[in-house]
Image: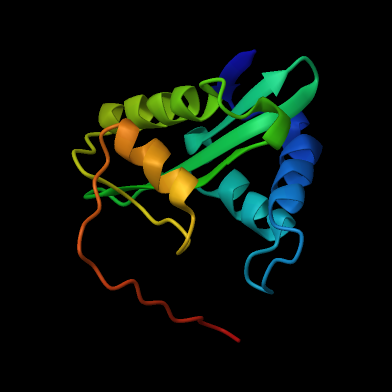
Length: 138
């Protein structure tokens, strides 16, 4: 298993993984659009897990100079419970810390108890917040 930074040749595999994880994405959540944006902004904060030539996991991070965010932690079902998500997160956390980040945030879809359990096992805690959003440019 190769846990590393994203490379342009990983593109098709990352898109495939994200589309399999979310087969009915909203208009603002298309895998190709997300990857296009990440490749142009903070591309060094996208990490993959490759099993041979197959991308089996990803995590994406962002940093605004104050807080870091974790996004797109995805591991293909056949490779779950093997420590891949934990290793991807550790790599993202190390990269963010090297930028001066001292606080991380992430969001979990309501009802995704498995993800909550994973993050809690890695030291994340539930913080009382109301998550709000607004689409721009629609």
